[in-house]
Length: 165
Image (tube, rainbow, N blue to C red; front, side, top):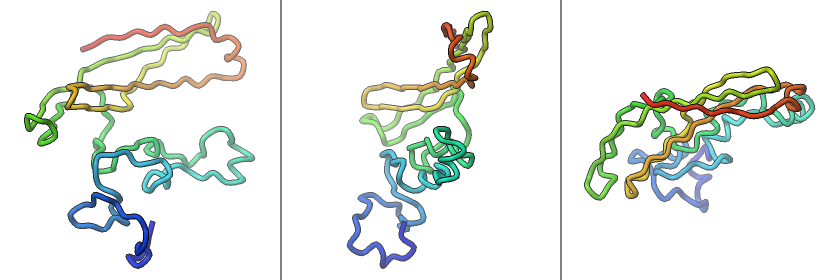
């Protein structure tokens, strides 16, 4: 990231910028994804230094911010985590001018069996991809389960359940 405009001379420029400019402060504009090695995602990834390599590797750094995984531009992210049921409006982004709909409310539960022990965990909505030209919405859910070293050999299977509101 350039701290002075003069450092940008001769460098590739963003093809789309915000009306007020200042790409060094606001980042690139547009609807495309931001690569993980670009600002502002890079600053959220955490510190991968020698101390991390000795004490945490292969785990993420302690200062990792989960927003580092979000590839959408900051101005296109919701102010809170989506759960389903939110009203969506795409204006001037479709051949017909606008598209209005509500995200479905879906719930996924997981029961993972480790021999006689079972652990329940739920999925959260991680990503929503709207493709207006195809009239398609993709909702990607994610879950995680912390598993100890003794449990990995005991893992038998996971049962997935779902329901809608």
